[in-house]
Every structure is written in structure tokens, then in C-alpha cells.
Amino acid sequence: MKKPMNFRFLFALLCTLTAPGLAAAASLLEVYQQALQSDPLIHEAEARRMAALELEPQARGFLLPQISAGGSWYQGSDSSLQQATIQDELGNIIAFNTVDADSDFDGFGWNAELRQTLFRWDQFVGLKQAGKRVAKAEVDFEAAQQDLIVRVVIRYFDVLAAEDRLTSIHADRLAIARQLEQAKQRFEVGLIAITDVQESRAAYDQSVADEIQAKRELATSREFLREITGEYIPTLSAPSESFPLRSPNPANEASWIDQAMVQNLALLSSRFSEDIARDEISFRRTGHYPTFELVATYTTSDTDIRNLTIGGGTTLNSNFPTGNTRDSISVQFSVPIFAGGRTTSRVREAVYLHRASREQLQRVVRETERQTRDAYLSVLSEISRVNALEQAVTSSRTALQATQAGFDVGTRTIVDVLNSQRSLYIAITNYYQSRYNYIGNVLRLKLAAGDLQIQDLEEIDRYLSERRPPEEVIAEDEAKENAS
Image 1 (tube, helix red, strand yellow):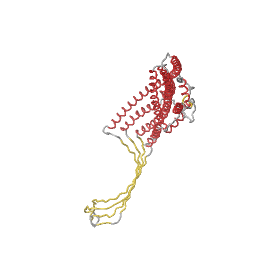
Image 2 (cartoon, rainbow, N blue to C red):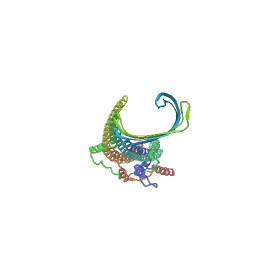
Image 3 (cartoon, one colour):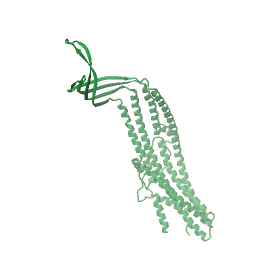
Image 4 (cartoon, one colour):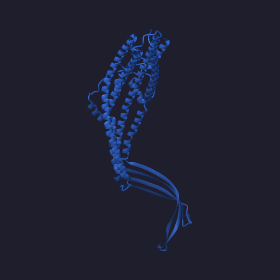
């Protein structure tokens, strides 16, 4: 008679995952580097940063000389009344006569203009705003980089957690299959009732369904990781048993909150937004201010007059070229007097928008404090939870051993064995999940404090070890089952 599967098989199966495989497993840092090259969100953030860097040169350009030039070619005809004089023999004007004068003409002209701002307050305010927009873009891009680190870590460990669940469920299914085989054998010799066989069959059918669902969840989690890395990563490294559980340093909640109030990138971005909105009020008020500009122009034109007809009778076929050149330097002064109330309305709009940005800043301040405090407490509680779940695994293992022994002597039912067995694999899965949660909470705390860096991933990588994907282990187990 076969012995029922005990807890040792569950641990043996999980341990095979951490054994080195044939293919090298990807480390967390390698996955991050791949995401850095492929993630559309980080590329979008980089493009927006580069676009924002052009705002300052554009704003400065308004304060520098503006030079323009243009030219034109024209052709047409002209009809006008010309006043002629009638003189006597001595040259005295004795009468005036008005005659028609018709002509054709064509010509070419060009002009050049230089404008230099002497005083335009809107341009100075715009330059100040542009500098703050550039600074905000730099902060937003850095925030996007830190966000990518967190997204990679979360999705990376989501895949590991899904692999752990599949491994545990698979181990449970194999154990139930052996329990079912043993129940059938005991029923055949009359040691147990048919209900025990039916209970084992129902538990086995449920474990098969659970394993199918676990495979689906693993495929989904891998797709989420592929979404930011750009390609499928079949094998990932996992935290070893020596992974340290360190408390936050400094071990003071207030210190982390104070640091977050100064360095949190979302908070810094909101402060820049509030400053920019305040400057926008000044910018729109410049619609009431006068402007002074230095303007230098140069204009020249050449015109040829042809077929000049005077008085409707005399036609002169010769060309009469004319030329005109004009240059000037002036200071232009402009005062807006009334714009239909549009300027005043735009100022009021800017005031309301500044009020909104100020409230948004207050909201982000409170969110940052909450997130920092929550992340700090989550790290501490997750350390305790990891230790508690490790003890729960030990307790579940002992309980399964005791239940198994009771079943062998007839004091416990097969349902008790199945429940204890399932409790053990749930405890193992929760234990590994809690370790992943601890790592995520540590990084979220650093993110809230504005202190998350690539070196944090390097530190995690030091405690990662290669492990085989669960599909390989399951395939080997199924091959052994079929062979037996």
C-alpha cells in the first residue's frame, strides 16, 4: 500500500524551483534595464521632458532682436486725373485744365525690419514661467524613472508569486491524487467508507480546476511584465532564504515624513505647478501694461511706368523708371485701453486656476504624508508578518504530520488530512507572498521619501538566486506519473 504524500513533497517541489536551471534566469536589475529601453511610459516622459526644455529658449527669444525681411513683385495699370496749366507768352498762368492720364506699370520692392523689446513685462514674466516649467519637467521625468522602478518590481514579484501559487497548487494536486489512490485501496479492503473516496475525488477535481486557474493567472502576470519590458521573460530569479528583513533607517516615522515633505517628487511637481499658476496671474495682468519697442525699417522699391497716355490722345511708349528708398528708426509706444473686458476676464480665470492649483498642492501634501506613514508602518508590519507566516508554515507542517498519523491509526478522517494539506500549501504561498510584499513596501517608502534609486535594485539583486520555471517542474512530475 502506498504511503500518502506528506509535507516533505511540498517543500521538495518548491526547493527544486530555486535550483539552478539550464537557462540563466533574469535578475531584477536586468529586467529593469530592459524596461528602461522598452517601456512606452518612460519614453513618453522623456519626450515630454525634451519638449519642455525648449520652452526657455523660446521665451528668451522674445527678448532678443526680431529681424524680418520680405519682397514683392507687382504689375498693374493706373488711371488718374492730371491737372495741366495754360500759360501766356510771358509764362504767366492764365488757366488750369484737367486731363486724363492712363499708364501701365510693374515693379519690385523689398523691405527689412528689426524690432527690439525695450519694455514688455509679459515677456519677462514668460521667461520666468519657462524656467519653472523646465524645472517641473525635470522633476516629472525623475518621478517617471522612479515610478518605473516600482512598476518593474511589482510586476516582477507578481510573476514570482503566481509561480509560487502554481507550484503549491500543483504539489497539492499530486498529494491529493495519492490520497485518492490510497483511499480507493483502503475502500477495496473495507478499511474506510465510500464517502472517504468521494471526498478525495471531490478534492482532487477541485485541485485540478485550481491548477488550471493558477496557470491562467501566471500567464496574465507574465503578460503584465511583458507590457513594460517589450518581450517575454521565461525565467526570473527569486529571493533566497537569506534575504534580510531590515527595519527602516532611520527608525523614526517623523523623520521619513519630514524627508518626504522636502524630496517627494510628486509634491515638488505640485509646488512648481502652484508657482507657475501664480505667475500666470501676473502674465495676464500685463494685458493692461504699456509696451515699448525699438523699430528700425528699410524699404526700397523700383517701378517702371509704360504707355503713358495723356488727355486721351497722346501716348508715350517710353519707360519712365522710378525708385524709392526709405529707412527709419523709431520707438513705438502702445497702451491697451479697452479690450472688451477680455483681459480682466482672463485675469480672473488665472486667479481661479491658481486657487485650484493651491488646493491641489494641499491635497498632494496630505497624500504624501499618508503614503509615507502607511509605507513606513507597512514595512514594520510586513517584517512581523513574514516571521509569523514562517512560524505558520512550521505549525502547518506539524499539524499535517499529526493529522497524517491520526489518519493512519483511524482517529482522523481523510477530510482532515486534505484540509491540513491545503492549509500547509496556503501557508507556504502566503509566506513567500509576504516576503515580496516586504520588498515592495520598502521601495514604496523610498519612493514616498523621494529617495528611490537604481542602487536599491542592485541591493535586492544581491540576494536573488536562479530558479526553474514551474512549467519544467510540472512537466517532469507528469512524466514521472505517466511512467509509473
